[in-house]
Length: 140
Image (cartoon, rainbow, N blue to C red):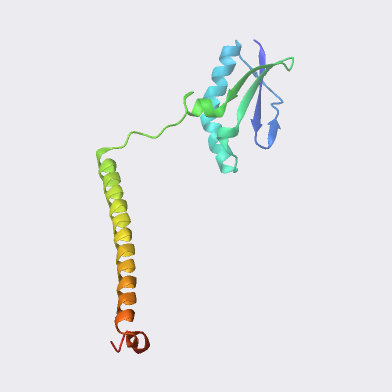
């Protein structure tokens, strides 16, 4: 039975497999690596290593690299992770958030208009009665 070495590539570098495993074929070695990845991810996370950045390099007995098995492909079943479809409650919440943001924008616009109107009224009042400026807001 052929001997295969399962070297582990991590962000820290390459951890070489010194012992290897006997497997009947390269396909069996690949499946062994795939079965090992989920359990190894737990250990990697516990030691502070990002498992999605890791891969197995399966090499033959002569050291020739045969297959690379990236962890991210196995963990995501070969697909990129996507957002799950929102449930109706989430859609309702998103609609409420959008409505709230629209209302806040409208209120800000109204506040800006009121400030501009107040400034115009103060300017008009100063022109009509110059003593208003000297009196201050409490005395008027």
